[in-house]
Length: 416
Image 1 (spheres, rainbow, N blue to C red):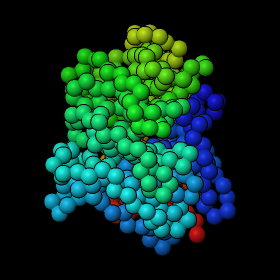
Image 2 (image 1 turned 180 degrees about the horizontal axis):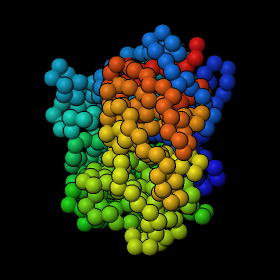
Image 3 (image 1 turned 45 degrees about the vertical axis):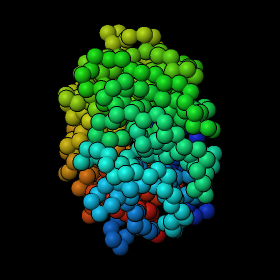
């Protein structure tokens, strides 16, 4: 894999974590240190049970669908603490020890009045935190953003940039140079925000202008180095945009009509950006790099409409592009041409994004099942594992361990 496939954020944030004696890269943001969903060194188990390959498990207080992140022997999560009527009281950041699962601290960072609306499928703590240089950045959409140190001390908070959400929050933040960047695609004035990572102050805001009637979306931005230029690629309702990180200037855009509630994070590989376009009828677009301005008619190399995800993010591994529909239809296609190699179904619905480790694809279902598939042009199921409760969070890999968040618990899956 060439360095162009690696996002600039991955190169900036590669850290280390110890599981036992070995030092290996961190999983420091949504879908790993480079945002691709691929562990390039880890080899976690493909099978486990109540008595096999579960190193530890730990109850997680509250409720949230944010994914675990790992760095410097610590696991970080966010959660919403609810009252007896399932209304949020506070938003919390939690820290656990990797080796033992021991909770090191829990910090309530935002207090709520319990009257905020969200979609029944969503949570009040869905965005995944990001960790870098002994700092934890926890984002809660329209509720606000906080920065903490490794001991749980709040260093800054930003709660003056609220917006009117639809169905709650979902987009995770990214770090680009000295900026923390996130999407805030509410029904009115959907925007991309850049904050100063050291102070939380607003650096720039870019309002996204499209023809989409429904303005709300939830996609996490990605940052890529393309031909020596750093680009923030961020899908919104009606279009995907690329921005210059220093000032938010628009570099290019591709329009896709009325697509809205876009969730999957964009990818870049083989000279193409891969973007899913959201509801009602999702398309998967392969957009050739190198464009300027509106490149809708000139740079879309291929597109597909069969089995395209509304929620899970895709994977590129070698020459193949893998993606999973919300209904559990898994596809493997040639990334350069879109030609299908196989398309098979796993049992259950999928909101968690699949990941790859040791040439295996891990697919978690909403029903609490995790299928392990072999990568390659021939479909093969290696294992089906049961957790017994719902999974919406995306797993993390640290060393040869898999960190999985279910509805109420956190698991470390590794050989004993």
